[in-house]
Amino acid sequence: MSDNNSSTLNSYINQATGLAQRAVGSLTGNASTQAQGEATQNQGQAQHAASHETAKLGPVSADPHTGAAAKDNSNRTAGAWDQTIGSAKESVGNLIGNENLRREGQEQNASGKAQEAKGQLQDWGEGVSDRAKGAFGSAGAALKGDRTEEEKWRDVHDEGKVRQRGAEADMEKRY
Image (cartoon, rainbow, N blue to C red; front, top):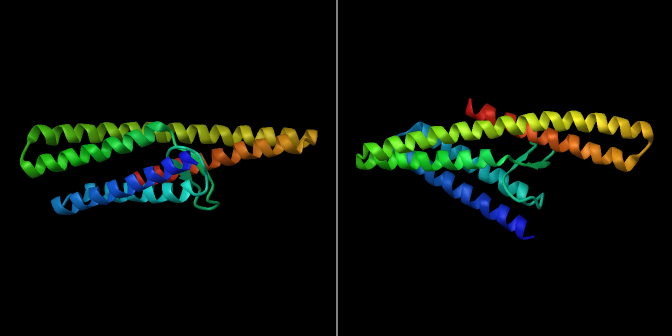
């Protein structure tokens, strides 16, 4: 139960962070910051929905077709957070005229984008691998007539599918 509460709390934090980031982007006229804020807010909303469907701790990707969820790679979460903090630093640096803070924010934002992309690729690769393992394992178990083992492999396949689709959806939003 506490894992689900942590996930729900994390979703609220992401929603609030996204809302604040959108507001900063709106005040500064930075469309990129607004878009990042919207993406963070949307991620928080998806996390909130998924936290009520699964007891897994941490950020999750949800399959838009089935609602199934899979835990995201930690690089994705940390990268998104670095982007948020970097954008905030950049905006504050612009607002107060502090070039060092603005540049530090740009660097942290860029680093966060790279880290998130790395996590997305890792999730995508693991998803493809799990789908293949699950399909072959399920087929092998079906040949043996082992329904329990077949279901286990179907779950591996399904979680891989969610992980792959979640990473693909995030990559499409970004690019």
